[in-house]
Length: 628
Ligand code: ADP
Ligand code: MG
Image 1: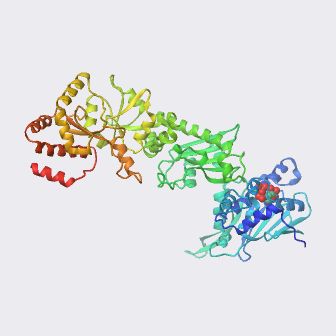
Image 2: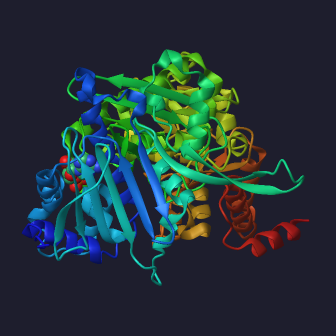
Image 3: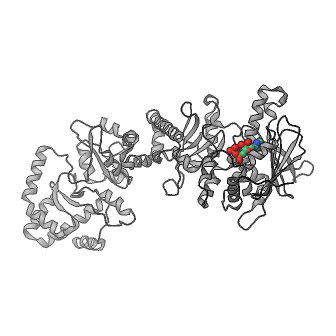
């Protein structure tokens, strides 16, 4: 029999398949099954109008079988089959679809190209990633003779007549020998095949069957087990997302989520919708109840599973979800996409952009609904993923800030619970100009700040900023509903009445000499020492003078490369009403040495209150002991 040569481009591709060092070889199964399913589709549609086909919907199936001794896997279908010339045309030439894009520049194919192939498939030829020889035995519907196509790879193929009873195709893979790096034998285990079907082909519309062996209790010999073999259907066929919403119970959605995304907690929300129009697709999106362990790390990859016609294209399509919603899990299925689509093309595909936009809108609507109708749930959501929304405000130079500003919340110092910016403003008493906030480790710590006490004494609430991103997000927002944000630990805090301000500035004016002297004791540590109204009943507090707040400096200092380099400009604020003020005046007149010590003590106290470390804790402790 004469050996025929593959077309030139097919040969190249085939070479790559055979020699590929690609690790994701298992996708060959997905490719063969999807071809089988396509072939069944064709005959099934024919059967709808042509009764001589003699098959009902339930008669169609894909059957997987293995022969461990011969090291073969066979994928059989009772679909449309191929004639001799179809075998030539279809299997002798590279597939016409997406792989063509790839063909154009495969001259210098490297590992990355192979990665692309592996991810998106090149159809039938992927068999050669695991098989040293492939036979295709096929009988086209309506033909009398069957044909066998055989190839051992790049050196060509043969076609001969053979026996086959019914229309359809058997693809027989003769597995490669196991090597150090690759165990092909694993594909001979029905367990492996069953896993592969679940992973890639669970929603193929026709049953994918195989013989499975289980050990079951032996009825004759008590306490013993015996092996039992039975034909099982491996795929679940109807995807949940294709079913009607009204037919799906919420437990069903939850169970599905837990199995599919390996979570043991039910999701917080389910968004299930279908869109027809420019792009037709089904989407099933979940908001998890808790963050995956690696969520706030670099390793975490966002994305939704992307299917076309029930066949998985990619496990994590990141183009489908915005960064601020990177926590969602789910599935998109669109018949408008093509299985053989390369990764690059996929990212730029206009259809994906349309889908992504629709998903974004749905997530926002869902969150809005949750916020207004199920506050408890929203707070649970926010305490888990709120940081991501705040990052979303800050990211991309605030491109999304208007869209996201109503979704963020902060703990209120007055109410001890989460409030939105809108709620904060609605609760503002007459006369309050700004939205007040303070940064700190926890709301409890923030409530203890002298400044919080002073602002609260005026009847104003303070928002507690406890996440690193908070102040950065707010600076990006600049204002909310016309109200500016004010850090109460900033030098310019302005809560006093005109009279109080006048009194204070007089006091600072007349004490200028002493305050400058005190500042000189502290050197570069502070930019000023002054009397203030912002520390409530306490003796001292620290505020930040320049652009950078104390909390921002802390955050920035944690970043690699800038450890300890970021310094907020500190102002030591002394309570003008506190007895300590008189004491200081006394010392300034009579005992400068003691004034110096007291200044250092007060400064260190203020640092402790603000949660800053002391440069020299031992000296501080010694000075206090000396006072005793
Ligand atoms: P694609 O599926 O993208 O067309 P493939 O390389 O997977 O590319 O398959 C090439 C062609 O071979 C198919 O288009 C189909 O015509 C034919 N083919 C493959 N497998 C079968 C099968 N099991 N039954 C009938 N035709 C098949
Ligand atoms: Mg195919």
